[in-house]
Amino acid sequence: MELLLIFIIGLLHAAGIYMLLRRSMFKMIIGLILLGNGVNLLIFLLGRLVKGKPPVIDEASKVFTEIYADPVPQALILTAIVIGFGLQSFAIILIKRVYKVLETDDLDDLNSTDEEI
Amino acid sequence: MNNSWIVLPILFQLVSAVVLLLTWGNIKIQKIVSILLSAIGLGIGIWLFLLIYNHGIQVTQSGNWPAPFGITFVADTFGSTMVLLASIAGFSVSIFAAGSMSRARLRFGFFPLLHFLIMGLQGAFLTGDIFNLYVWFEVIIISSFVLITIGGKKAQLEGAIKYVALNLLASIFFLIGIAFLYGLTGSLNMADLATKVQEIDNKGLINVTASLFLVAFGIKSAVFPLYFWLPASYHTPPAAVGAIFGGLLTKVGVYAMVRTFTLIFAGDVFLSLILSVMAALTILSGALGAMYHRHLGKIFGYLIICHIGFMMAGVGMMTELAIVGTVFYLVHDIIVKTNLFMVSGLILKINGTQDIKELGGMYKSKPLLSLLMAIPLFSLVGIPPLSGFWAKLFFIKGGLESKEYFLIAFIILGSFLTLWVIAKVWSEVFWKDAVNLPKKSKGIFFHELSSTGKWVLVLPVIFLSIISLYIGFGAEHIVSLSQRIASELMNPASYIETVLSQKTIEP
Image (cartoon, rainbow over all chains, first blue to last red; front, side, top):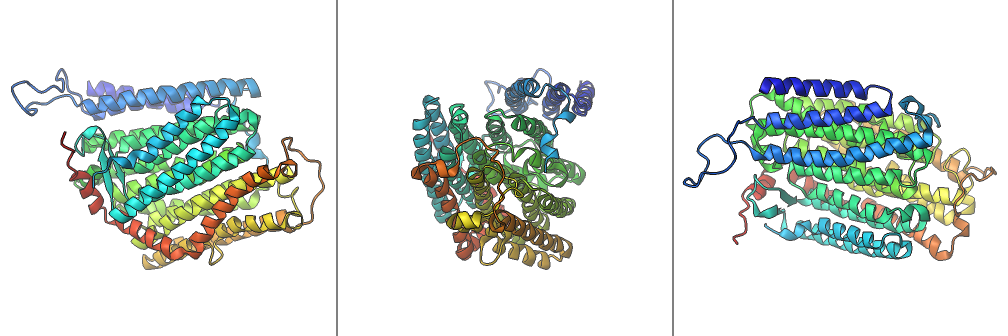
């Protein structure tokens, strides 16, 4: 399972970076979304995978005696997903607006603020 | 000390923003309410600062979960000083915005967003949890995204695309760093991390994690190979937004860098070498960019980069004396950069342009205002006894002590080039004869405003200039404050102990 996740994370990162390096604004946003998902899986993986062991203490005992699934990474991922969703939707609205005003999807055409002295 | 009231600055800004949302669209009321609430926020900042200064570090555990498990809020001297500075900048920007922003922009909710932004900053300065720091960073950037695009001019949208893309990328790097840190230690509490990271034998993994944080905070604070979004975007929004961005947003990156590299990754030789090289190149590229440009906003934007290099140099040297310099420079820089962007807005209001070739004759037409504007300009250069000078003294002393002659050379070169740039701005804008060109800007000009309108624009500049003068002439107070902060940062034992030994309140 770990090996599979490692490959998926690597693939998502590679695809995200490839998309980021394209000149199209739209592909840039797709790249950022892919990277964000890759990172969420990375947190999940680095929080150690434990199968079928909920973080609930047995009624009889006071502390955990066996290995249990860590709930913290899942809480982190949930937060990161929500934040990422908000930011990505803003970014998508922004590129739509930019496309309307500047009538281009090519990032290389967005350099008028750089060129003026 | 356990004190739940330390989150008051964050909560107060949240309440202010919500109150302002309730008066959506009613600009006149929003202006007055925002200024009043910012003034109270400033009072709360002063209260928190005095509390920490007199009674030491205060801690609160949210939800009453004991230390390494829940989210901790810590107010130490560094954090509370930054909270105070953010409140000062927020207060003066809300006054300046009331006078300078166009009605259309104010109607789209500038004031609530300003308060949300300040709330994010206060949260970032007060949190003691690395993931919570990430969340506050997101609060800051989402508010800043809207602030930078508010008004929707063509140039603003172009700048915003670069700003948004690179800040999202920085967040992703930050999150990868947190994932690695959690995988290595199983903790997110910064005080707990500080002890656990020291115990890990695999230094290679620690270096990789530290580099990820360096890239994340490097993009946020605009250091050498990662700063290109800043000159492309910071001059595009109106001056009030530029002031809060230039004063605080890059500095929160520096704050996070100082915090993580003194607390969590302390004593890392590999890291301090990289930081030093990056600092030197940041100083050089920022200064050269400022020399080349003619637009005031761009010049000040590149000067931000140049001076971020100074603070990085202090972090790179990693001695107590250099950290004193970094903290002093941070205090000086937040006030001066906020003021500079407001000055550039004022110049635009008076002359209708920000191109220094088209400006001129300000000293002849507005002698008193020019003298006022001279204070932030020359404080920035650090002509003794103005505020920039004292921090550089500590950088050079610290550099001599740790034998970093290479960095000292760059700091002196950077100061000299800053002097050159400011002298150029002074002679072009103020001393040169007026150039009679057709006015480009449409809005209302300064001379058309009522006298209250004029005072609303000039008062925040006077307020921040007085603080700048105080930092310069009352340097002994700021130095003793910076020394206290630096000794707390370099000896984090008391910070760690206060956080971790904190018992929860019995129900």
